[in-house]
Amino acid sequence: QVQLVQSGAEVEEPEASVKVSCQASGYTFTNYYMHWVRQAPGQGLEWMGIINPSRGNTNYAQKFRGRITMTSDTSTSTVYMELSSLTSDDTAVYYCAREPIDACYFDYWGQGTLVTVSS
Amino acid sequence: QSALTQPASVSGSPGQSITISCTGTSSDVVSRNRVSWYQQHPGKAPKFIIYDVNKRPSGVSNRFSGSKSGNTASLTISGLQPEDEADYYCCSYAGSPYVFGTGTKVNVL
Image (cartoon, rainbow over all chains, first blue to last red; front, side, top):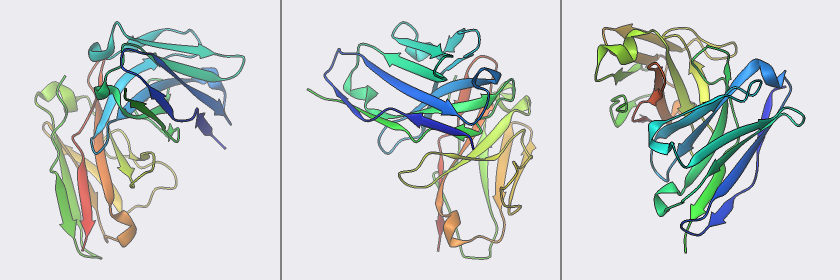
């Protein structure tokens, strides 16, 4: 069965960086895109960006460009999302979500990773 | 790209039908027919329930249906059940960015 398993909760200080992982299993890793979506406490969903794990090419939401990096490791079927220059506004649950290529929807989601930014 | 507009909350009694709207600020956002819907229970990851405006993934109850008129997409839940109490989000592919709706809390009275 398809599973997306994310790394554990993180606590970071302002101005630091955080790197969250998402390991996929149960399907051919390179046949699907992967997205990152975040949700601040009590707020809605916010799309952050997409990576094609096969080629490594990415597209980021304008809001995050310059401080977000998404990478993939096909040997371990894992995608990573690194966000730098953290502020308290980045406190949120971060989800990875799978997209069948060009389908424009997210059919499987990771369990979420809580990132707390606090001094 | 601005978020899609959804009502903050919708309520209904068990067995009733409710409809959640999802409106784009420009016809481009919803007009591409790439609208999907997600259900999210408290503390859980979102669950995919509708894609391409009105298609249901395998395993999703046929009590959930989607439609679209102009730049407004809608999700209808018929035969409302207690387990339907959750947050619901629409999402549209608007070219490069994906845009989520503001979210709707469904209350089952």
